[in-house]
Image 1 (spheres, rainbow, N blue to C red):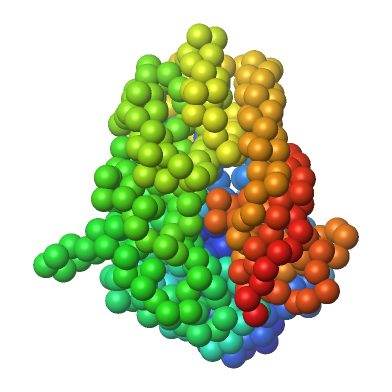
Image 2: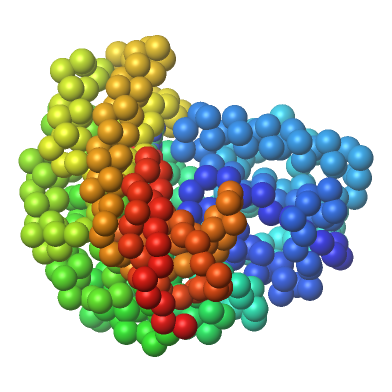
Length: 441
Ligand code: SAM
Ligand code: SF4
């Protein structure tokens, strides 16, 4: 049996959550985690394939880990996650040094699969998309020292947006039971976690099995009741499934942070239709108005893409117009990336890279200006911050507001894990600078 493992995690929060699950499974088998893959007997690369760039990064990581394997052939090298699912046997043909290929839907079997590799010394390819939800088994102490934790409440996606590879690599939607989720949340809280983020590709369509088919608003209400929990967040939401019941949660649930990440992807109705998103720009703008009337302080962030096949200059200008109208707190913006197997891959009228780059740069400069204005408008305000740790530079403490803005501040005390009240002194592009007024530990 190998003794030490190292997991390299790339991509989204869902992958981080999957890596936590694998780490706990391996710890159950008696393996010890190490940070440096050079010290490990088992190396797992948890990959992303949502854009071509993510895939290139995963392949270069695989190159680096292969050097270790060449030096120490007894090391078990596994590629897991979305790129593993997408490329499957092709990947092992190109890189015969790989011992394990495992898709995200198979992670629940990681213990059995590893035992098989070790005892039979055979390669394993596990990419069945029908595999069911992994059962949850906590490993005591795993989350100690963490202020914020993730819980994956569902797997997969049924939406098949035309540009997106996710439904092909993460399978159809399946929701975990509220009981399972609550028991995982209780465990995180017991270990000291103060803020929980519920994760899914489209949490708005969460529907558990059972007679009453509990929905996402129900789940939020249940989790927010847990004693010891200070803050609750969730991501990602889909505009077509954002219900009034869920919007009302922002007014009624004290622990639910006033922040919603609501990807809009494009500002023109024709592009939204070609993306098969299932809403119009007006519907999106109406949702934002409803959210702001429910809670005027709510922060809205989003994902957007430029250069979708056939996107004309005037369609792109509608995206800029929507950004100006909504005034998002922050945006994650991407150039459309062709993914083999998706509907958009087969569409004509691909936009060339230089044009995509120029649209992205115009969009990002507009958003930077809005973000800075919003951050500066907070100067002089008093905000509550959950302290998460020390900032990378300057040795200050760092935390986030309920609206998910990073605030750094000086203090002689260790407030990590506590809520503190800060006066905002400066609003910068990516963070705020605060001064402590009140703390409660
Ligand atoms: N389920 C979430 C949703 O519906 O918004 C997130 C899915 S995806 C992992 C995160 C973001 O990546 C998407 O919101 C989208 O903006 C972007 N994305 C997905 N496919 C893409 C592609 N082919 N090219 C560029 N960006 C893409
Ligand atoms: Fe991809 Fe659309 Fe599903 Fe999000 S909702 S994961 S963008 S298919």
